[in-house]
Length: 342
Image 1 (cartoon, one colour):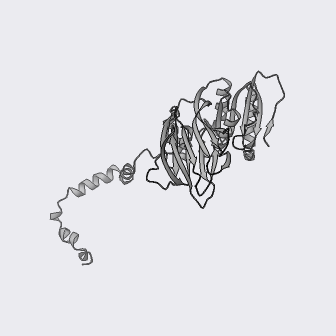
Image 2 (cartoon, rainbow, N blue to C red):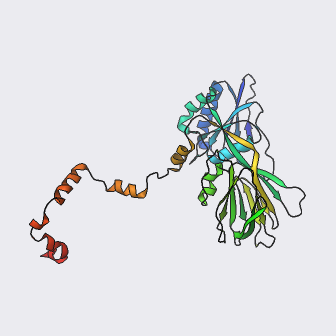
């Protein structure tokens, strides 16, 4: 069950929620540091610990106070996705302090906590809007859909690991393709650097309003990633004669099984997430830094590795300037390896 530690002191004019993973016991000192500094800056601070995952289409119980000014997330991208559930359908921004691995959504690293809290206290940040995806699932014979959302991605996998799931893909009710596969990923621009990227999908910049569909091991001649605009809808049908049913999952958290004959419709959500940004570093620079991208090609790397000191190059030039015809046996030795033993 979620655990919310509430400070009942009502004398504070500002409120902040600190979200951290319940299993990050080794970082309890960091949690204490953040809460203490926020309190000293005049915030009423609540702390939320949870490892619980809701079921698909189950509304997350909002533990966030309506007057909360900001949510400070201590952890990795998984904890950021959990915090996104807490602020869903609210205007409350979140800011991440990375205690995980890549921490692509985080704004600060753990050694920058003092600076982060100071900037938060001064409201010295701007808001970055992140698009969300909305999904409706129509089960066979259902009169109403099951609805959910995702910040990163919505995945549809095969339920039976020994068989392919047969899918039909439509865009704006026009059939694009039909194939057997391990599944498909539908991602937002935010999620394009996650699972979809690993599966061969392109990276979409956060200010692009689009959705992409990336097939997973599709048995088809046409199985390229598809990108649609904000006004379009992906419709994915699990064919009734499919050897396997499906398994849908939102942001790697909320999931359920889907039988053959189910229909999944995914479009842009009317809701969005607000990330508090304290740095004007462009997304491109974040991409290069977080992924440690090799901005220098392998040919350039070879040239750098093979480069020699200037003294060596000068000596080399001096040697090549010599007239080897004046050196006895050089020409013959070059062509006759046996002459090395003579």
